[in-house]
Length: 382
Image (tube, rainbow, N blue to C red; front, top):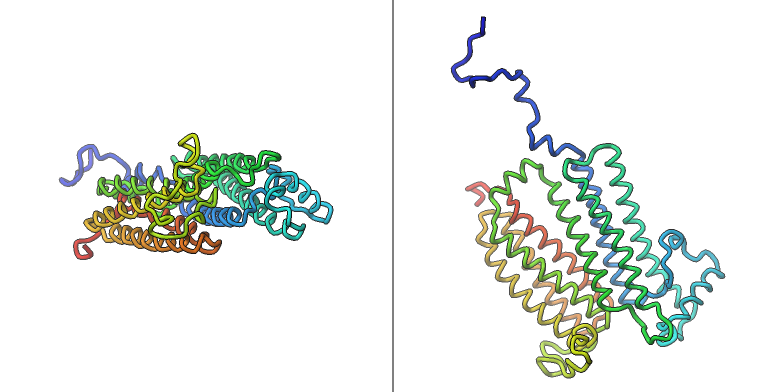
């Protein structure tokens, strides 16, 4: 004889009593060490930030060509005795940078630039090791959440590609008899741009892992499409500015004109299109390269103001605050950029300028993320 049913019980509800406790599809897809992976990615993020900063110092101190060979494994061990140091110095003396610019160097001077480049490469090895230990550790323990394996592999693949690009960049300056004393600026821009792409992916994944899959799916329903679209545009514009900044650094264009807002007393710098063919000026003419960096910076700040005003109309306080921080970052960066020009790009200010670019990149990512996955705000808070 069948049991009596409550009038509030759904017809066909023959599921066991513990069914209500069963994990749903959304939660089931989020199994894994989300917090552990997030901490691991935060460590990687911090290491990449340090890597970019050390790379900036390596470029600003003209240290990037001090190691003339690419030895991914054995190169981890620095010179251990006087004979090793002399051998490295002898190799450096064969390239154009020493023969044209640095014949004044003693072995002690060489050691100073060597340590910057060695430290930069060593950080790359550390980052690769941290990624490998973390990824394979979580993989073996079966703690990677559903759908995240490919994302984590992508970070490692981009890191490996960055190592290859780094040597491709250095190789352009390790020449003899060609009159080349620095790396190719467009290769430097590729190297720096890829670093920011890696940083962007890691940062985005950190933000995603900071909230549950259920929360992200619910938040996505409140996506502010226009803000997300505009913040994506700002991110792309900022990326172009980063590449232009690398071109400036690659040919020391930041020291070519030190007046502001004019350049050599003119709006467009003199001899802006001196080189032939015409396209070379956009990469190799210091005046035009700095001019392009300046103009794009102005356009970037204008667009940031437009987006900031749009962001103030968001219904979510966290989103509004995020766009406030982006605007503050751009205002500060504009001042630092002007100081960099006026003082002829001294190492200290130029490095702060580059680090501030990392800060702004991160702030844009956060604002973009909150546009896509807003944090619900109560009516009272709103």
